[in-house]
Image (cartoon, rainbow, N blue to C red; front, side, top):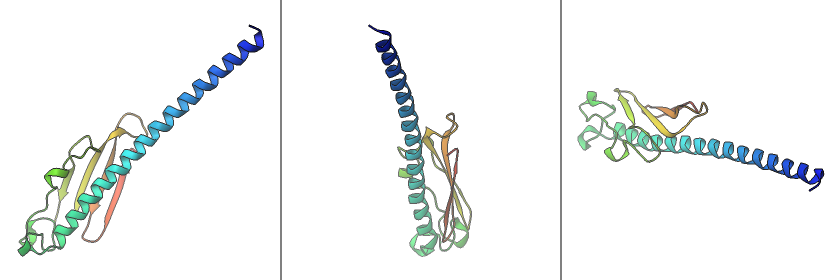
Length: 136
């Protein structure tokens, strides 16, 4: 083989190697973003259930205007079937007060730092839901 052919082969191998590395990075970023979105969707579903409980009268088994049992209603808890979903690597933790519920969900994929899992904190009020992504 001539030097030109060897040079083209080496150049081709380098280009293919770079393309593989870029592809792996794009896939990893996509998996992380997908998991983050799935955790947010799961927590939003749980948050809407908490708001339903808040609005339901105590006589019907709801909170009667509170998330905890302060208004003679029942205290809200995360439904057993949603404590851990396939999108989460740990159980959802919920901190319940009379006026808010704070949900924390930990994803299955590593975040931007590459070492710790994606974590989403969602604060549920009587009429608003706000979320914060940690290690997005």
